[in-house]
Length: 267
Image (cartoon, rainbow, N blue to C red; front, side, top):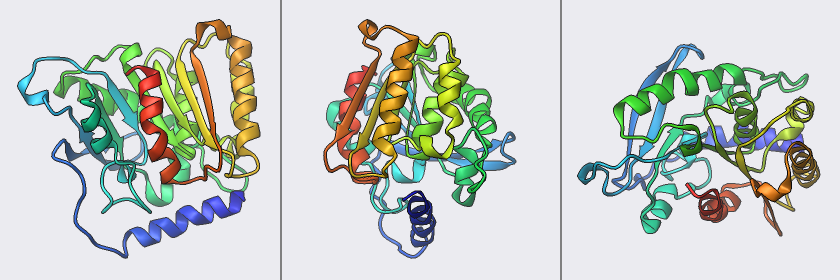
């Protein structure tokens, strides 16, 4: 199953360039490029601003999300977008979303904190350093943001779920909340040991997965939830887990449950 997941993403990368269609991104979404010295490349960024941003003086929480190609626009997505812009517009959500372009053939490298003997990777620290030290300062300087910890959120699916959870451990002073969708803990099992050795963990997190993903998915998510519970009392209500019956490892699962996660995290 793990091999199938990897081949699945390789196939999607190829299909992405085969089809051309009209953009489905709303007027709330714009893009820009930024140099990422930590990764020796430039990154395309998708930016969602609330509908009334230009007519207000308010400051807004910020969600940083991975795989920006899949969030807002079916033209750039693999096999369907998350419809983040339409969902947030319908909620009149008071939040800024920053979608970060994935690294294509370097995606595994960027979104894994440790090197996997079979699949490689392990450049996650540099990727997070790019977010924390290059991208976030630009966003906070350019836009009206609430840039403190409780108002800085990180979200992603699969490898993006893995790196989002890791970000809570690596930068607890930066990220106060995370949406951890179908996390690929299997590719970096060291993440369990890192959690065991974590003494305090005050971040709010939502674990989401389907029961029709890989054979490891539900056991790994349950295992991580227990480890987190060992660090802090469940009475604090900082952790939520949802296992979707019949849920598969795809955009539909993550798209259909985004609003639930968003609302629980109280962004």
